[in-house]
Amino acid sequence: MITRDYILRQIRQLVQALSLVLFHRREREFDLAQIVLENTLVDALGVPLESMLAVDREALLALCSRDGALHGELAVAIADLLRQHDSAEADERARWLYRAGLEVGAAVPMDVEEFLGSD
Image (cartoon, rainbow, N blue to C red; front, side):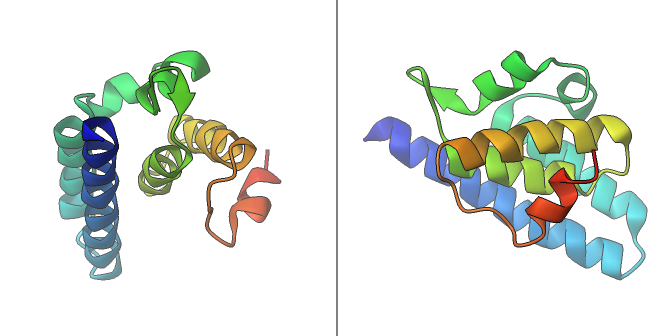
């Protein structure tokens, strides 16, 4: 139960950050959007953006797993946030996370099929 509550808090924090990032991007406050993205990854996951963009697939999926099980909603929340960073590395990692989320039946954004098809 404690693990589930912790994961739900992480997801909530990531979703709130995504909302802020999207707001700042819409307002053309790109520096603020980047700061929110970077700070949230450290606060919620303990991993700086630069490190997240450098890890391999297995290490990234391990960030979304507890007790050997992938938490699809957490993977999708991280992917949603990574998509807001304009880089090929972020897009690649978002794709890894979306695919993993789909494999375990997590709900994904409606445009994921199109995003995954752009490989």
